[in-house]
Length: 151
Image (cartoon, rainbow, N blue to C red; front, top):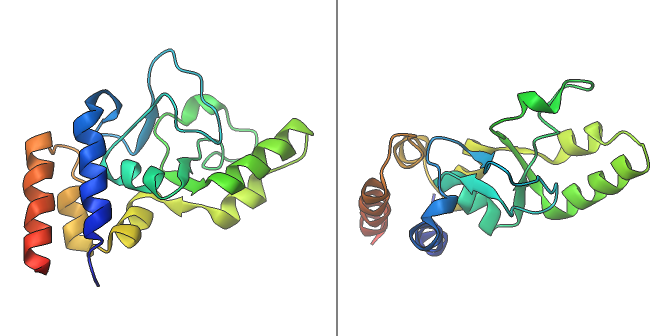
C-alpha cells in the first residue's frame, strides 16, 4: 500500500492552521452553539482521520448512523461519513418528507476505515495516527515518520 503523502501533509497543515477545529478524541463533533448543516462541515471539529475525509469530499453523517426513529441526541460523535453529493440528495429527500436512510447506508464509510483507505495506511499505522490521545506534536512526528519510511 502506498501512503498518500500529499493528503497526510495537507491534513496536518489544516490542523496546524485551524487548531480550533481539531479534536483528536472524536471523529467528528459539532462545536457548541453551531448548527449542523448536513452537506457542510462548517462548525465541526475533527480528529486527523475526520479532517482527511473532509478534504476528500466527505461529510459527517450524524443521521445515517441512527436507527430510524432514534433521536438525534444520540449522534454526538459521527462515526459515519458520506460523500457531499449523497448528503445533498439525502437532504432533499428529507425536505420532501421521504426516507433517506437506505441512501445513506449504501454510501457511508466508517471513519477509521475510510480515512485509512484514502491515506494509504495499514491498520497499525492508522491505529498509531488516529489515537485519540495524540497531541499535535505526536501527529507531526508520526506523519513525518510515515513519509520518511516511504522514501
